[in-house]
Length: 291
Image 1 (cartoon, helix red, strand yellow):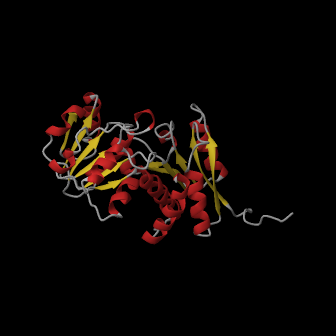
Image 2 (cartoon, rainbow, N blue to C red):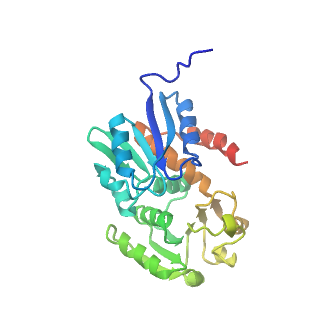
Image 3 (spheres, rainbow, N blue to C red):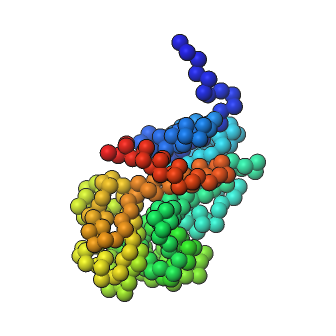
């Protein structure tokens, strides 16, 4: 038997809380990062049932857990137990990353950074662009905060239930002065232009495989679309992405967001910035799990 000297009294603990949490890909990502940077930390999943979030957050803090990711259904529930919340996370109304400080945990939302890095690493910038966001749920809220905080010229929220799109618009206008309009998904063809389209619905995933919120792919050409993003990463190419790519549009799937939001969390925890080559190597290594 050989002694394991890799984990000792100086090893820090990070993790993720959720219900369920066994399916999470985050331990693989962060423990891969730990190995790559020769970090003295381990990252583990913690199953926290609804109703026990306060106990979990306080307990983790007093145990010295240096950072946590938060997944469903706790992204809103953790907020009252934080000492501070970053502005964009406050606007989104949900956090997915907690950083340990002397005063308590600070809450961030790195989903928004996952989308941002996905675009920026391809030389795509939102400033002064017209953005179409399809959907009005949590991911759409993150996408909307990203668009307005990065200086989009205008944003259209398209959703099947238009009242939800209106509610999202009104919520974000409390935090940002921006040009935001709404429409039903059946009215998408009526918009004038969409330089960037962000798809946040489940169309294309699970029982909806093969479906796309854009019924006629000529939309991408007619509306001068230059880049599209789909939060779905299984399958790697939804019909939405296939149609856009077939017309020469830059098409990005949700795998990038999955990796980049984790990278952003790690950067927050360790006060460091990973270079493009590091992230590329990380993506290449982790993509093997999806092939």
